[in-house]
Picture 1 (tube, one colour):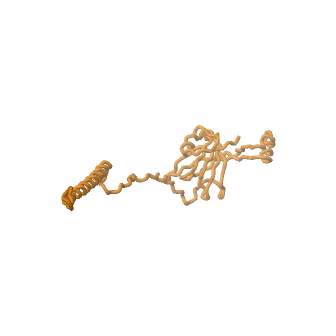
Picture 2: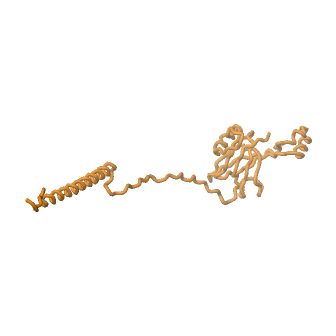
Picture 3: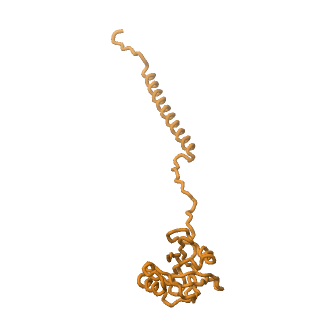
Length: 210
């Protein structure tokens, strides 16, 4: 009929349809969020820590190991009793033997020699019928048969050469290495000795006199 408008659908039905679409979108978003949370939880479990807990740095609980310092024997504070002149700081000669005293200190029998060079060596050589010019480079003189009793410091340092250390340069060796060599080579093992202010032998160095 003229003037009558025609409805092709119900307005109420159209509203229901729109709300249905919105609800589906919300449900879909919620499902996606739940899936993401679940994946995050599974990942955190796989890494061995609860979700939201920061990773901890692992540090070694093993303490650092430091080498204990070797105790150095205390050096006596009284005079040694070594048979040397007061104020003498070094000597040249041979060790003929060793013994351990009741106080634990090591005593050595020392045969002193003189090392002459230059004019002094040439003069001595001429007086004794030797080649004066050859003697100028160095001449070992041992006219006094006396041996002296010397006391080694508890921390005496021994530097060996060809005979004691099989080395052309001075090398530290144990004191026992020197003492063991005295019986066989003491009278032919040239040594330089150094003393402290109290007369203790603080260093023994193998030398070459030739």
